[in-house]
Amino acid sequence: MSTAPGPVRPPRPAPHAAVRAAPRPVARPVARLAAGLAGAALLSACGAGDGDQAGASGAAGNVPPDAPALAEGLLPAEAFGPDATVVDVSPEQLAAGAGPATGADVQVAPPECAPLLDLTGPPDVGYEEVAAQSALQGGTSTVQVLVRGAAATSSVDGLADAVSTCPEATLTSPEFGEARVTFELLPADGVGGEAVAVRYTTVVQDPETGPVTVPVLVGMAEDGDRQLTLLRVTTDGTEPDPAAFADLFSRAYSTQAEALG
Image (cartoon, rainbow, N blue to C red; front, side, top):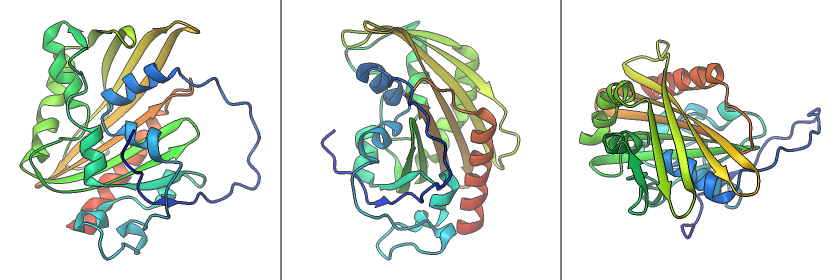
């Protein structure tokens, strides 16, 4: 990726953390596929390791003077875990990672599922203001995006209906061959406003390891003219915890509501 990463907040040490052997990373084309479907999650995977110190969110009371106003509503770095590396994501980086998830060389079957794949990330046009950050912890990448403007209601309105209509899709591409993506609605009762949470799982044949599964969790919520998007993708063979994600999603909504009104 050519875009420079945002500033990095150094992780806090975990003095008594157990040392474990890391699972074998997912092959790069497979990771790119899943992260591409997750929109901005790719930014975290590409850039969370190299940059400068980031300003804390408004919840931590230390927003840089040149940060967008919406940054007041972002989660504090510690919300992602004591050893997470958290970076700010610029509008330019977000634009590079958002937008259509299925490129020109990707075929989707059935074709009516293609719009659903593009709904699983933050909007790439039509917003007036944006603030975003990404967090990397081991093989787990989490991205939080807040947008304000006309696009802030388009994804939330259609995502739940689209998942009900298209629970499974098959993708083919010269880069990764064939992949199967399944979609499942998750509870979002603990989040205020209009909210939806989705788990989608990508299974693709890796020529070296055989079938590889990459799970992604996505939460979207509206609050007036704002939209919150929270994405979590794992690329180390582990499964993200839906309950932990739901707690973070609820906290993210409450944080922005309290900070921004």
